[in-house]
Amino acid sequence: DGPPPARAWAERDPAAAARLSAARVAMAALAEEHRLPVENLLAPETLRRIAWEPPEPATVAAIAEAMRRLGARDWQVRRTAEHVSRAFASA
Image (cartoon, rainbow, N blue to C red; front, top):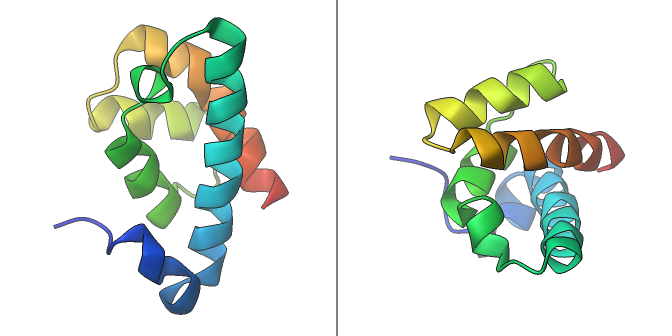
């Protein structure tokens, strides 16, 4: 259950790999800005699952809802959903 290992994404689904890469960069910058470990902002598994199967369209609201369904806390959703949405759009 869940996406394949991220190292296989470039071969299996290049668009998902690009989304994950862009979102990881965004999360790293946000974590640095707030002086938090990146995994505290959003569980890596949550980010992988959303990057593998993003909501359509990948709006901030849709990504926020997906994060909540996957167990993200409200404060995590508030801090990260917009950044993830922008990262996906740029990928």
